[in-house]
Length: 196
Image (cartoon, one colour):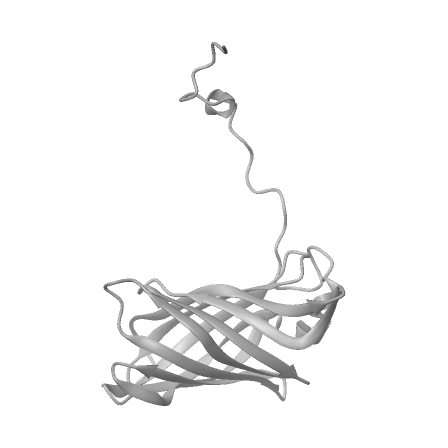
């Protein structure tokens, strides 16, 4: 029988480790080499910033600003992070708005990317969405396959998103089904590349 205490694993008293040693980048000029499976999504990689309009049947329309960072670490998926803030009539920031984080992954067959995509997105308000989609040229379209909510999250039941690179800008439109309403327009924006 071993004298080791199972409640004290060997790593418990190990020395501290340095910061995360692998680079992630939204700028293709630096960082790891882009995985070949992401070649079709290359136009999306970058730091984007712009303005949009939001609304839903249960809320008043609003103007917002947004920053989206799409980066990679050399593996066959993209890291997606979005944060937005409400703007007043003079385009001044009023308060933080929606945030989400997740991953876009091309579907691989025999190690090669297809035009089919999977996206996993999560918000701090307790909603996680699994999206299935397709890339056509510089356009990406997603629809929810599943929505998981915490007990205190708003009732979001589905959604669709359309992204496109148009004249160098990132444009998108998002529809949402929530709070007893079917798919309805929710967000749309135009963002310009400010990094990458």
